[in-house]
Amino acid sequence: MSGCYSLKDLERALSNDEFVYYYQPKVCMVTGEVCGTEALIRWQKPDCCVIRPSAFIPLAESSGLINDITLSMFQKLLIDKSIIHDNCDKLTISFNASAKDFLNNKLTEAIEHAINNHLISPDKLEIELTETVVLDEMKDVRDKLFQIQELGILLTMDDFGAGYSNINRLSKWPFSTIKLDTGLVGKISFSKKNLTIAQSSIMMAHQLGLDVVAEGIETENIYMTLHNIGCTQAQGCWISHPLPLFDFIEFIKLNRSWPTVATGSLYMAQLDHIQWRKTIIDTIFSLCNGDINELSQLRETPELDPTTCRLGIWYYGSGKKYKGNIWYDYLEEAHARLHKVGLKLIESALRGTSINRLIPLMRDLTEQSVVVIQMLQEIENESITEYTNVK
Ligand code: C2E
Ligand code: MG
Ligand code: MG
Image (cartoon, rainbow, N blue to C red; front, side, top):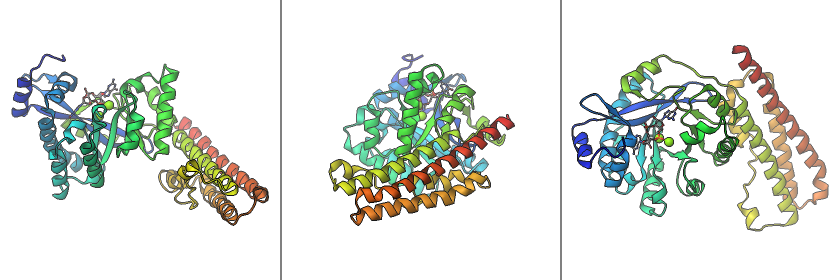
């Protein structure tokens, strides 16, 4: 279809109000429930033919008409949003914007105006940024995106894993989420290389404190695989195709749920814990060696409070759903004990205690660390048993 339309066709369609949004649900892999939706543009022609964006967005982008389309679609999103939130107010709504939409102030001002006038709450709005490649050097765009982030709006890097040097861009731009590309996701069930790329991307995002959405999930097998490696949200035709607004409303009224099993989040919790222990050991080593070089200064400082370390954030956050599980309940005390040993170690090293005299405390740290890992794995075992029994 691409290439059949002229700029005049698109301008006419825009002035005739022929662009609409379809909505595709996103499922939270921790709760198994719909937690958000992505608005995807469609060109609904007067003859009822529905045209996909690949047939006209490239021309809109190259001609600059995309700016007018995005502004007009944002106003539509605000109307659709009221209808969606009347039916389910917890859903986050995301829309796609090209990085070019931030070359001028118009979109940022429209968003700011909507927030200031309470037309949408910033924590329910998310922007999926496409076409980020060409704009790396444009400082103005970056500044505007930081402005957007300061408003409290979430920014997603769309199509992660499709281009190159995305990782570099992640460190420079204020993203809160990465979205694994449809092409990558579609191949993980038959390509080990793609599975490894997906797994490493998820781990890296987790370390950077970013959420991971996988799009293009077409089978239960792909959903479960991504779940198992710690992906946090899922989207794809296995859950639902993009739907016209009122079909989407009917869909959310069904209150459907998708499988949840704790393996992915518990795997991440174990990795967080191993990483924390390593940070303690590295810090002790640097302190005892008087080794304050550039690398050791860049190194993460260990979080000594058990409620705010990464494992603690999981425990008192999404992990809370295991309350009542005996291993989960014991874990709190074991984890606090581990942190006490960690604190003692750091304090002793700061007082100048030699590494040899710290060995007994390091052994304590290892012992407590093994207990924590064992408890996490026991919760994992019970979660798997529960999941298989339900199936
Ligand atoms: P995207 O944002 O990465 O959206 C994902 C695309 O994957 C959508 O195509 C969606 O319909 C499709 N998809 C959903 N589930 C599956 C699945 O299970 N398997 C596969 N293979 N594909 C699936 P769509 O709607 O044709 O949109 C294509 C692209 O057009 C979008 O990719 C986005 O980059 C762009 N786009 C869509 N709406 C807008 C918009 O309003 N503004 C801008 N600037 N770009 C838009
Ligand atoms: Mg998108
Ligand atoms: Mg995408």
